[in-house]
Length: 114
Length: 114
Image (cartoon, rainbow over all chains, first blue to last red; front, side, top):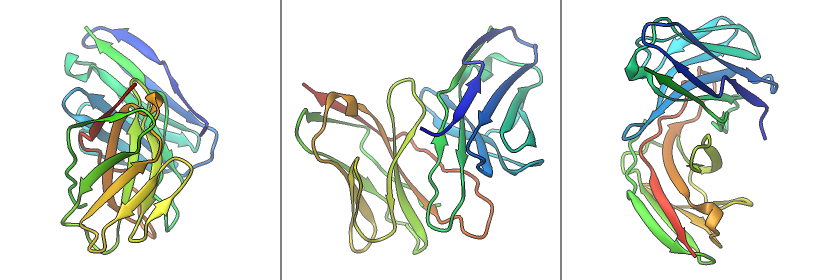
């Protein structure tokens, strides 16, 4: 299994509080992604990173920011959490090659915003 | 990226072959077909991918029609542990550029019956 660790795995917080989710990898892969998964919507890309300090927005980036100061860590921050951000968040990594787009996913972080 | 169409759900008897169809009639020449699955509460897992030739690995076989407008994922001897949501994704190869992840639709919920 790919070495991806998400933390925390479960978190309950209140509306308006800041939240940071961490994704840590031991594979030295260049690309990292944050997805959220909600019933009826499937997996949706929030932000992704294509290298240290290089990030870009995905489909549902509003209300989220990311940072990547080291290859192995990709942080997702909710500056002021809202109930609509209650979701399961998945981190993924990939090492891009010309003939593959395989993503490896973490086990997910379940966030509940009350 | 080309759009895919999959049945919402399918049943298959344990021990039989599970054949999951996917339509991608607008696929472009440089787009690969990827299959992932997601077992309940876990992160998605890569299964297989292909461009135009049929592919087989230890998990499954991928059959792509000659016109590439559709494909079938085959699990040769389904077990109860194969119960999951299966995603068919079409995506261009990443070579030479940034990788912005994969777009997951709603997939097919495959239920293996004992």
